[in-house]
Length: 252
Ligand SMILES: [Zn+2]
Image (cartoon, rainbow, N blue to C red):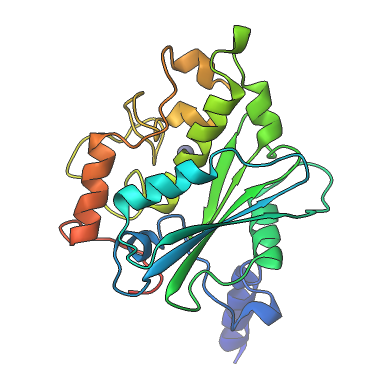
């Protein structure tokens, strides 16, 4: 009996961080890449909505670019649409990954409750707890871009510009939702940077590790990429056509 009780205590302690009492029956949130196939294929989700929730004065500039990049790699015969909404995140102090998740699930709806897939892009005021981080992907349908830090990353004499960096960071975080690099599959191509897991070793890819860091201008000398490179696209195509096995998918 004591054994059973202690098992129960361990179980409830280890899960209390993930599920509040009222969240047990709600939708699974997954890991970045957990809805990659949901986007890349049309089996379950015929269309897609990209939701941009932004604080007053923090209007996202890369909404159309995000839509274009999705359309380039995903199969959505019913279309991809943008839903932009100004919100008040009502938060002081730095953002943690949990704060980003909480804000998205408070203000947004389920990612997959219909044949439309919903991804959320948050643009809050303030910085991440590590203020050298420009953007984060926190679950299968949620990313955040920290424009205050993006402004800080603007280079000497405006190169790179904060606009270039914001475009790149937005697409970079979306790339993590698509599972790049090696988040939910293993690429047959050797293009993951061993020192920066989940990132590309090619500075011409938007998935290059330095893209989401305030020091991006120190690491990329030329144009900041806002596109997936050939290796990224090859991975996405392999996932889409089933050649690459995908793990941790929320619905398949
Ligand atoms: Zn990244």
